Image (cartoon, rainbow, N blue to C red; front, side):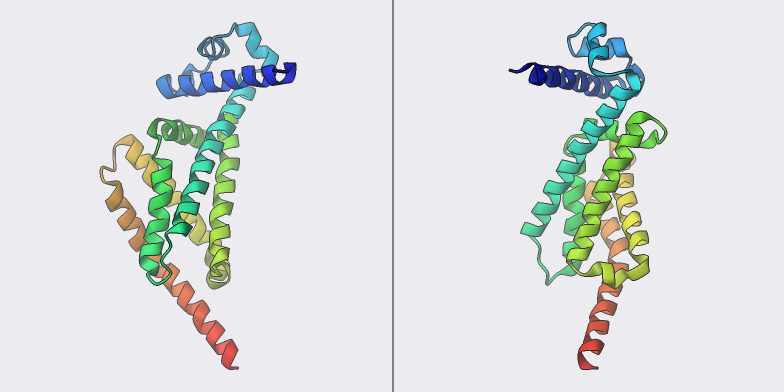
Length: 214
């Protein structure tokens, strides 16, 4: 292992230690000394890799956010592999179900993610918001894939934000114990989102038909 690789590995140990500590005791436990101890290192080693606690928390937010983003990406690929274009309601429900399954695959990690996400002004929260924006853009890519960006028009971003917000809201409800049945929550989300989805798609198809016959 080169010196550069060894340094990167030690930095990752500190990030992993911070994540483990956040899982077990929450974000309040993340002091520089405790992060170093969780990584099996002396506190002085912490400052070789991070200028301060805030820099480490930003790295923690990025690491957790990227893990969640990777899970969402995998869920999208599963969705496309099983998509039935002849049943749009079920396709809509399946999309949300796959993403929710990915979000809740590691509930402790999701709990830390949600806590970081709520701390908008913190270093971890700022990093998390950037990751969430990437996830939002992935869903936007899905809408464009089906031509729904044109179907929704100016309403697309409001619809997209409603969907993303609802997904994270349900995940938070499950993690906090307010929602007992994930399946019923997904059913409710599918029922809420399908009417505007169907209306936008029908409007788009009608417009295309009128253009073709003009």
